[in-house]
Length: 266
Image (tube, rainbow, N blue to C red; front, side, top):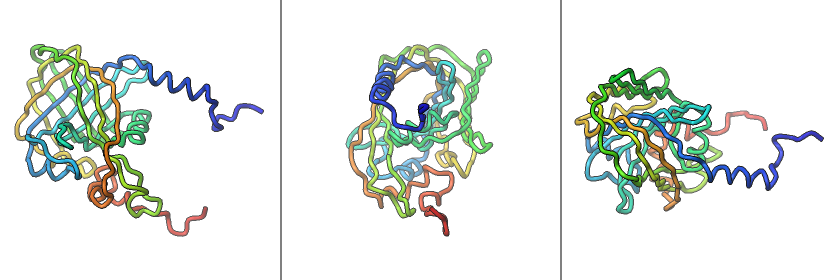
């Protein structure tokens, strides 16, 4: 019988896939990072417990082109500064990606709020423009002129917070209590330049980051970076505490409450 490709993989195939995953080379990205001070109440309002606001109401937008051989990827995120158990990090609200392959692992393994979207980074001489867009709306746009090179930071460790959960089959909450994930990244930078410009937020019912207004731009840079990531489930979260925030993950706020279609046949 011919090989049935949906059939079980052999132990050797599973081991080979695991080994290939553990030996990935450095993958470099070129991207724009914007950090701004926003409204403290707005930043606090988007943080599900047990996350708490940090000492400054910061928002960060990252917009990058990732140098995957034969498979260029646009990757972005909009995150707010947060604290958990005394550790400072970032809580992403939305992470647009240009390919489905970049969605599945991050969403299913780590609980990252990834969605298909438009991610563009364009440079023409000293002029740079970077965009995050979905559903025809460029909800974040950074534009400006590239200035002087900045000192390169040494290797740094960064922390992101995610919530990993599985909606219940009957549409009523979750199958089990969600998990708070700490994702640690070891980042290296090989080029960093200052940008003189501004951050434009446009209103979108699907990605309402315009509710986190730009009060003061803290940093605006163009750089080349690489990082790895390791996730760790640190604690269970009460379902009733996270449910009011789950709409952040979906374009349709009612999606988390969806049940089987009436009259469905199995």
